[in-house]
Amino acid sequence: MQALDVIEEAPRWAGLDLDTLCPRAMRATLAHLSLDADTAEVTVLACDDAHIATLNADFRDKPTPTNVLSWPAEERGAARDGELPLPVTPGFDNMLELGDIAISFDTCHAEAEAAGRPMADHVTHLIVHGLLHLLGYDHERDGDATLMERLEVEILGKLGLDDPYRDDAVQPPA
Image (cartoon, rainbow, N blue to C red; front, top):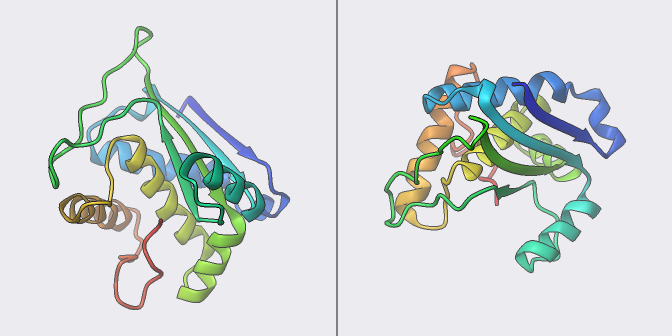
């Protein structure tokens, strides 16, 4: 991915190779949806709970930490529950401006430990999840959640990762 910016704000992220992990997760997601990863523009902020709690308060009126937040460049959500979101269309430069993702080390680490999953696997799931949000997928309505979770499981399976929604897995992202 030529237009992927990963900003490691929290020093604890240094032990996890986000410069490899993020493009791998994003390429798998975009390929699964028949989109060209080389034309996608995404920024990932790797922060801590304090910063993501501020972002969550500012943008969602929820002053608590969360695992991942997404800001799509365009609203693409489906009009009806369970339908596909609006398609992504290239801009004047033929690039797919998708948006921004923030991910918190503290919450991700705690969730990975609680689920007994490797941190890299959990972060991969959250990057896939965040990117799907940028593409218009959501989990607020039942049909939308079913569609989004199915896509996540399929994409993670292609990456050789287990289904994160099994009963013994960590709870779904917020």
